[in-house]
Length: 225
Image 1 (cartoon, rainbow, N blue to C red):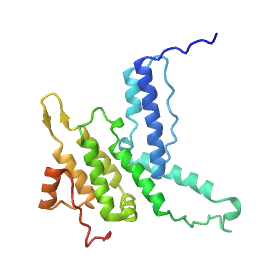
Image 2 (cartoon, helix red, strand yellow):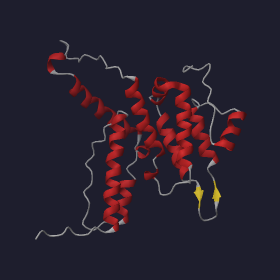
Image 3 (cartoon, rainbow, N blue to C red):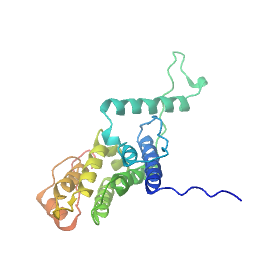
Image 4 (cartoon, rainbow, N blue to C red):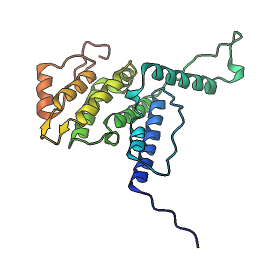
């Protein structure tokens, strides 16, 4: 008779969940051009809350600029090795640098995955009711106005996705259960400002955001017009 697998403790189950989420984050970072090649920790026999927190703390926003630069270089080195066989090298040792052009479908898929990462409540301790839908709606509004290619190109600019991630986390965690107050207005405005190409919202846009949680983004006269 086969032995039954030992029942996992709540902490062990949570550790496995957070390790799975970390692997998902690592894949998402790779899609953005960063190769996180640090060894993943193995689950200890006795899982403590500190062990779970260490997994939660492995977040892109917590990496130093030097770490991000290293992970970017790791990705580029791997891509060059995969992209250029030995017979596709110039005489001076330089590889051919023709980059494959992404299709609109590929760009749209990348955007959707990035949207999921930005609004994902799984990376947070608590989530404001309906806040995830508000953030997703703003992202979709911006994409509709910018177009897939424009949105993709904007998200390739330095710090754009990082700023959205930071504002989204603050907004989703803004509800203070102890005193019942909501401090989400500022991070939500910051989130919308980043989507507005870093420009302050107009009075009309601010009113729309306050009343409806939506913004009629206008990119006329910008590089993305």
